[in-house]
Length: 138
Image 1 (tube, helix red, strand yellow):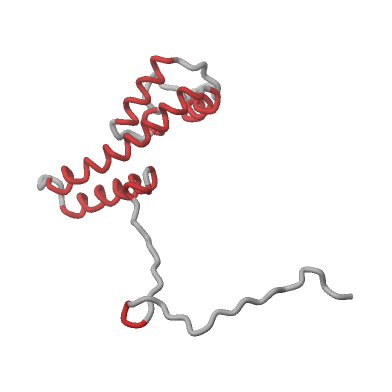
Image 2: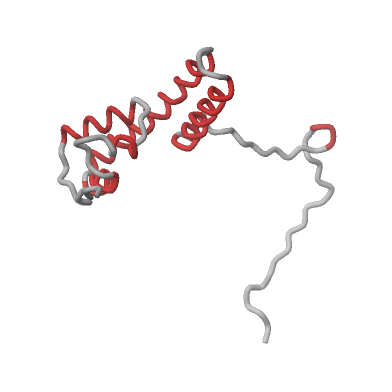
């Protein structure tokens, strides 16, 4: 029978530093927390809620994780020892996670532009303004 770990674990600066380093190196929190001696995921979330300094460091580590995953993409894509389909899946997974962690840096840029005929400026023949009385008659 599997032993259950306590949900509440007192904040430990050494363990927290180790967790943050592993996140920044690209490892997922859920995998880290399955390692021996690590707290459960909910405890880490509790630490982030209760400790602003840890919360800030945790956010920076997640940003670093996105950068690490993005850096790994080229290495994986160029590694001919990995079968092509496997490379594609691994690259796509890292692209997706990086885009979710840092959408402004790694997400797809979506812009909308309104243009007129032949890509020129929009032409307006008439501009109307209608005033509406907010108090209905009655």
